[in-house]
Amino acid sequence: MNWDQIEGNWKQFKGKAKEQWGKLTDDNIDQIEGNRDQLVGKVQEQYGIEKEEAERQVKDWESRQH
Image (cartoon, rainbow, N blue to C red; front, side, top):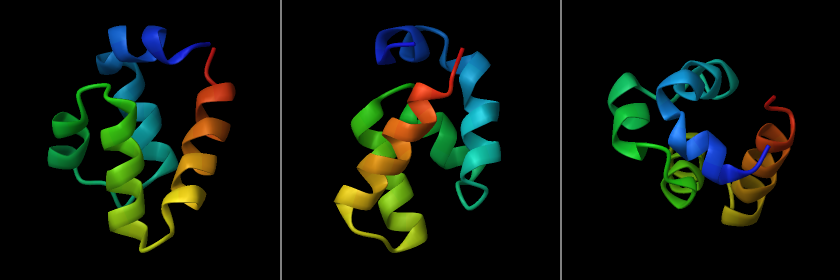
């Protein structure tokens, strides 16, 4: 699945994102609004990881969405 599909159906995918990254708050999820860069930034911020690691995690998560 490509990111455009995830972004277009963010309401459907935000629960899955919350399952993947439990440290993200509901406010974080709502602020992201399907924006991939914002998701990477919030994951990086909440987990205290490097941007490259956050990018990898989001890419892996994205590839598992059907």
